[in-house]
Amino acid sequence: MKNIGNITLAAWVVTFLLGYFGLGAWLYEVMEGMDRSMVPLAPSIAFAIAVVTSIVLTVMWARNLGSDVLAEDKPSGRRKFLLGGAAVTGGVLGGTVAVVAKLSPWLQSTVPMMNEVGQEVLTAETAHERWTGSRIVSKRPLGSTGFMVSDISFGSGRIMRHTNPEDLFREALDRGINYIDTSPDYAGAMSETTIGNVLKDRKREELFVVTKWCTSEGHVRQGSTPQDYIAALDDSLSRLQTDYVDLVHVHACDTVERLMDPNMLEAFEIAKEQGKVRFLGVSTHTPNLEEVANAAIDSGKIDVMMLAYHHGAWPKQREIIKRAAEKGIGIVAMKTLKGAKHRGMVEFRDDATSYTQAAFKWVNSDPNVSCLVVSFFENEHLDEYLHASGQSLTEADVAVLDKYDELIAGTHCFSSCGDCLNSCPESLPINDVLRHRMYFEDYGDEKEAMLLYAALDKQADKCVTCSAPCTGACPEDIDIKFRMVGAHERLTMIA
Ligand code: SF4
Ligand code: SF4
Image 1 (spheres, rainbow, N blue to C red):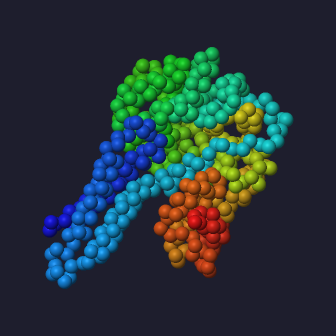
Image 2 (cartoon, protein in one colour):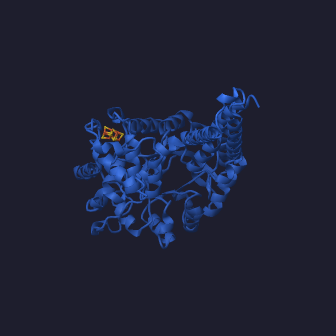
Image 3 (cartoon, protein in one colour):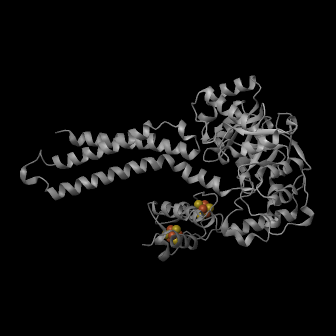
């Protein structure tokens, strides 16, 4: 076959495209948290077929190689085998790169963001007596909704860790919390069920109940029918044992397209008319937080935004929050503890007695914030967290936050800003290496971190003998060489 070479090349091009738009897009949606049953498998299957077809064509091309040239110039069987093998390997690697390229925004920013600022903070080792029985003492307007919400509010993502979660939730309500955040995909819908079992005996109108457009398996996918959206909401209402929720979020929204899905907007209008929901919101993480948040503000359709916000917020985030508040959008802060769960920070536990309270006070010192949501799953959280309600940020709090920043300074590449990259003559992906080290040390994801590190184009072995021109290149004062060498030691797979 004369054109076998061109056909093979075309097949690999199709494979790369299907890697990016097929399997890559499928994995992207799965990582984004979509209900998998709603994400079509066809593009991934097409990718698999394309890979097999391309490999077969490549083998045929290698076998045919030399048929158009003089016999003496024909490659030997061994050369054909090597050429074919190299072409297949190159093609498969290219396909993998196409898949990873599609996922890279999530891998680089959203995943660390979601983990980095997790809510699984260590409770203070010593509960101070003065915290006992703490209650909500301050409520704030939630944008233009007309509702006053407790400044510290109930996140239920980890509620099932408590031995008696209904009791914990009941006690939280008794102490004045009136904004409740849940979702069908928290603990396989058990969070909603637990909340519903308590909610049914309460004065519903005194509580602001929030859920998400999700099923127990994940988010309702963009492009789902309005009926799919409404069915998910109906399931939530049934579990929550209520006729309506106050707010439904587009959950962990990463694209403007999903935020503005016309089917979702139509479903919201129908459900609102039916009295099943009152307001529409969006919760968002990076990498497109800025774009999504700005689109939400400009759309005029969003009543509440739930954003990651902590005492390391980037200036633009404050601007976004201010702009949203000016338009009457309620701001709910989440991920307020700036990574306090990290295992590598055990030395910080002495200060943790007041760290959470200081961090909460910092967030609530922004008058544009309506409330913050934090996960409650231990009795101690009620005393410790609620003690910060209505409290002003003090110099002592700032000192605690500064100390926290000091402790993480020079170690944690939180921003992944990339300012140091040009200083490295070896063009090492310093931000990636240090992030993978963080997964390894702080999140306990050793295996994942090592795999990610192994997959990098370049690794930090060169740092050992380098004269370190990167010194001083990090605005966060990270000792790059020292951290890179340590990263390589931890992350390298030794046979
Ligand atoms: S120490 Fe490592 S990161 Fe720094 S310049 Fe040298 S090779 Fe690059
Ligand atoms: S300059 Fe510092 S914070 Fe920015 S990527 Fe490099 S090491 Fe990380």
